[in-house]
Length: 600
Ligand SMILES: Nc1ncnc2c1ncn2[C@@H]1O[C@H](COP(=O)(O)OP(=O)(O)OP(=O)(O)O)[C@@H](O)[C@H]1O
Image (tube, rainbow, N blue to C red):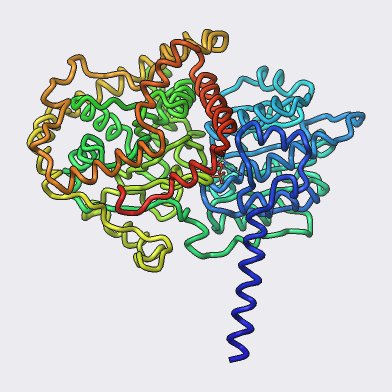
């Protein structure tokens, strides 16, 4: 009895401590006033759990291995203290190389982190120089970028290795100047093939350098990196870390699955989108580039416009696609996740062979530094659809982590064919499927047979017209357009960001406009359950203020030019209005995002 009372009071104390921690502010973490102001301007009010624990430790100068689920705010967890350290660095000390290196596994992540740092610096009104490098840059460009040298360098490990081997960065200079080293998405760095690059660089990291490892999952690779890089004896693993599923998969993502034959996947995706059974914005993952174009062409015939993001595209195009999607210019993005697919291996093999062939005959190379699936912060994605299943649990975790970022909610729907049941079983045995426990679970999506069958006839008809040849041609045409645009418009967009809209990436590929009978689904085709589900999604969208976002942002575009700025302006005006009326923007959205499973 006494024991029960004791454990009950311990539990109460623990809960109180947790609540106290949840109320903690950025200020209490010891952040500089300039950073606090910048966060406020960004509408970021309170730290996430990983930020609460990591920031004070990093400010104390400790090495940190931070493992926290996708979308938990790891970037600010290291960027804020890193910048604070640079604010107070000794300006008189002559440095020969950047003070801080942030290494990430893909160019997309380089760009994302770079933008985040720039925006913080701008808002803090401090003079710090930041550069991002990528493996495609010429040695002279690398040298120019590193002249100075900058305070922060953001790069993939491959590019650092290139700088070292071409003497653009000298080992002795790194040893003299490097004070902070961050390995972001550390669980991916080795699997992306950067082991030898990291090994070439680590001997030059000085013992005094503070090393930070950020990772979404734990793996042997993270342990390997930890042993390779961390010198400092204070290696701290955060209390949040453990092996439990809840720490890996965000709780705020409702996970669904649908059993369907592989040949019906386009039909099921059409049903989800056309009948508006899932909430926008939607990110759809496929395992091959051809499947991405097949889906795009197929959806186009039904008047659903989407953009395709794949490693074959020039980097500028990929960045524009991400920017546009994040700015809300379109609602459906099809992303090819080649991270574990055969296509990647084959293409890589072929491109290696191709390097020996004449340039004329060489195949288009896939970008080995492409990694859009993991770590990229797609903004306001509500639904992730796995049109094809990833081949591993880790792939699944990273994909669904593109929604439910920070304090927002989301949903994922996985279309599972009989061949993919093993992956589903692996996922289920990891996360469990006991809904009643209130923890993570993956449940069947309430899609009625009628809803699918109502579209089958049209879908099969249209599916036949999306032939292999049509897919191949569209893929080639898209690539040609993008290369042309990318080269021609790169400089132009730098000086005329408002023209970004010209490069809309959800352009229609087929020549004929979709006929009205495919564009609109007649009411009589929908059964009662589907109508109800659709109404629920609509209500939820209204509650979240998402309706007609597309039209709204277009209007804004014409008026204010730059889509990114236009949207930011709307946001800040709304915040201003909310302040006037006493409403808090982020708290409201948090409350509005809380929905029941049946709402989908
Ligand atoms: N304290 C916060 N409050 C609200 N939003 C936040 C906060 N910190 C970060 N965010 C936002 O949450 C989103 C996810 O953050 P971030 O990209 O750092 O996650 P992550 O943990 O690195 O995820 P992943 O492992 O998938 O890369 C970003 O849009 C970021 O701006």
